[in-house]
Length: 237
Image (cartoon, rainbow, N blue to C red):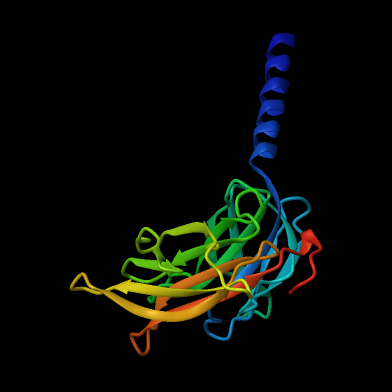
């Protein structure tokens, strides 16, 4: 009997350790490509204590937030009032959490149809070891491959749904500026210019670049977000 009790205690102890190991305590930020259905905020529930945290959905990189998730998946909800007047929760998006203890959650319009989440959510490691200062993180949301031409040097193509990171060009002018062309591959295999701009090479910030095809006008679109990691305490240029 004593042996059985000892085994039972060990079982529950290991089970508790296993559950604790699944919890993810992270610091995170959000970036919402487009607010869908007027939803400009969501909530999460912390694994410890079940505390509710409201998450505003900024259409730029948000300030830092903290959360403790029950598993290696982040789930975001919309609070609504049910027919009985009591609050109900509707899942609006979820995604696996990356390896880092700092994450960026990218909110994208979700799939159409009943029962599908309003938002697609993607997670990216946000620490400066995974995403270094002076680097560009290019996320291709277009249905076709894209590539970047930096001061005449062409990057490898980025397949749909993938992302890459690369440093700024070293070939700059006296103001640390250099030309950049973003190209989208057409259905005929030709590369089409989507944007032609100048970027500034600097080690004091990071850049997040989203490439997509505008759903309304069917035109190549490039969105760039300058990122000064708040924990670095850098002075914006």
